[in-house]
Length: 326
Ligand code: PBG
Image (cartoon, rainbow, N blue to C red):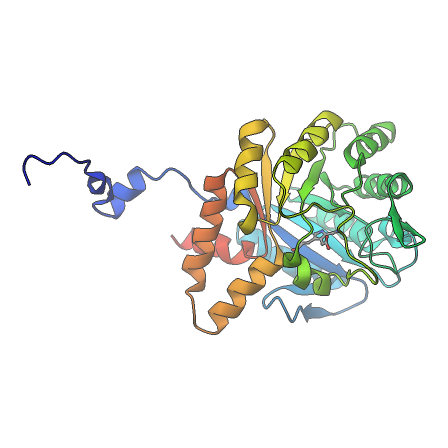
């Protein structure tokens, strides 16, 4: 054996302290963004059946929810609304007293240090469930931009710290930037979901947010999962249009894209560990097939390693708790 040359990689894996010393990537509580579903009405906390542990909550119960989140050390939330009424153009999305606007005001009044990120889209608010204006079965681009801008401005007026447009119309960052600036919100950043694939992994979310398209699919506006260069084109135009953060979505099946985006642009990269990814882990762990804690921590750390600066995840509460127990 003496004359064989090889490297002794195991020297740095000798014990837990040594491994910690050379660990390259770390998950922190500050990396986590918790998505929340705010429901119109009173005294309701409905568990989403395909997402065990995730609830739609009404405004009167939001205080309790926020106390829990803050105690766990989570500092930012992403808000989705489930309105009383839906219509053709998603009026409740940009209403001054829309559910996300009310929830934002509530959080900023009571917990000013929490970062409120408003998801800016129409699909939870439109009767047809598409993310824009529909005419003759087609989702119109420029007409949808006007409604998105209105939504973003009303969210900023309610106190949102970050606007996160997710509808994938072309030019949404440019239009929202101009609209925010004109309305006096020059300081509000845009977290663009510009690299959003048309994905089956959004299935459980559509139950949670009641936003399943009533006809067709989202393939004319969301990206084809087979494409990589297209992601870079999307990211490039968002950067030019003034995005402050770039979101890659979904997470797990797209870690290569996260790395590409991280290497090509100098903005904070956000990964969205979406509903279907969460549901798969929950289902397997409820069956006793996997160890939930180890799996979740490995997945989230893998996302950091791939290049994500922030992670939007339904596992945020559990992960924050596990991080504090370490
Ligand atoms: C659209 C939106 C979607 C998600 C976030 N914003 C769904 C869609 O495009 O149908 C999905 C998030 C998830 O699956 O967790 N406004």
